[in-house]
Image (cartoon, rainbow, N blue to C red; front, side, top):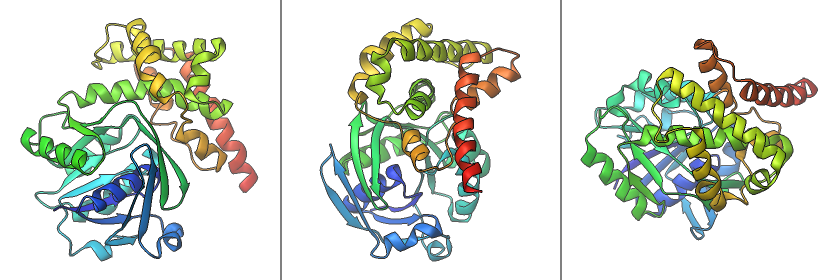
Length: 318
């Protein structure tokens, strides 16, 4: 039995909290104070393709004070990328010698931020490619899965046996998971996948499948992917694919079909007028490109379109 802390009770965090608690572990969670009234009974529910599961957590709070006496084996970060630094600094006092922190987030830069704060020997990385939709606070539906969750340590700083054991335990609890020593390569493939799909799906209110079926949006996605391969090649970022054309073949034929009915979380965030995770996706590509004096006009246009949508509703709320 492990002591586990989930940081962020959005869609992904609720899935992990539900299944790990139901699997027999002691699970606490941190969420923003404004959401605490939704968790008065400490109950979380997950439904969808993995079945319906409910659980009552050991505790839910907005600060770490109730958790200071708990020796945590595992902390899972599921917050949005723009909250990563604040979140890892908040839980840093809870990271003991044997505590592992699993970075379970979208985009580029989260692993780097967390490992800088707590050290690589405490930091694991997850590539997550299942989709979950928040029906209401504390209640989530798992809608699609393209592959198992893959976890690993990009720099070999954690014993392989420990990561394998953790992956097997998560899998036993009902979240399909496996160890992968090449998890950083897989993360970059997910970054490409999300950059191509998420902002377009949010702006156009389209599912992934609708984007792929439309000739015009497919051209835009092709351009996004081509530019990311240019940036990766120039910046020395390793990818498992020879070129953009080889990736696109896998993207359209294997990765996208299992998630065709899925709408990106960015779409739901946009509808709810929340901050959008664009800086760790296309925004990160634009930044990496500028540092290498490269032009990435398709990614830059997508980035500014999302920023414009966000600015519009922020201005109306002011």
